[in-house]
Image (cartoon, rainbow, N blue to C red):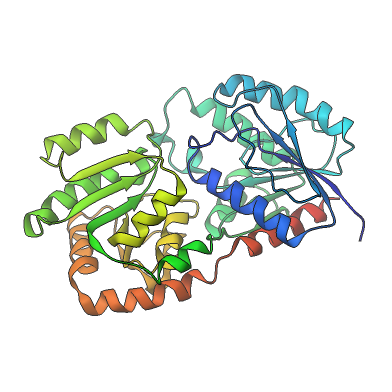
Length: 367
């Protein structure tokens, strides 16, 4: 098999600043290094990336770029102008873009990964000044790429529907879960708190969760709620709602925390809840299942299909259903025992190795 020279456009990464797409990128690169010792990879990083992103494997090379992703206009300008020159200079056979956007004139075949099309499905969740960026660059990135990779069947359907892409151009590579979560299941020591892992954005429905938790806590005042995740642009309203509900001392928003600390929260959480109104995939749900944490999640796709009967599912727009879900996963010991057993079995269907294999297949298909 011919040895390929593959570029990986990681210019978007801001450690601790881009949410689940960071977990995805790190999981993907690590798995590519495990399954592929033949092809050469050139990982384009920025000034903020840090030295721990690029695998230490001999066929991986970091190509550091003098740009900061925290300035989106500058990052996009660099991606569109300088990155194609680097691609030509390195004689790349393909460019893999793991974070939605691609150089419009790359000079080599491209594969771009789409984690969702929320800006088209739910534009109401976006700030008005962000929408033009999302609409323009994601559309043209899909157009110029010879193949696109979706993280779920739901996202694949949206790519075909909204961008009128031929189905043959769309590949599905479901996301994975770090094996460390399966180890957590063996040493869990539950304490009376609920865990939610989510960026603080409107579509995550955390305001609905706060209201449900306030009602639930009238029955179970011993419980606390910990919501870990990037402080997005809905942070202020969520803090104010928490305080207005009298939950200041009962709900914590620690922000984006080191993975080791997050692992400890999974090891000690009594239960896990994920009330999102829209998702491209939902990595935290799979992590909770792998860790054997009794979990409840929204009954929306793709999470409905991902979790199956290994999580209690509820209508995220029904406050009473959410309260009942909290009661079930905290107090129904028969259900909790079943979910503890079913979670790891279900999560075992998802691995970063499988994600990497399907992604590499997509790259090879365009060369």
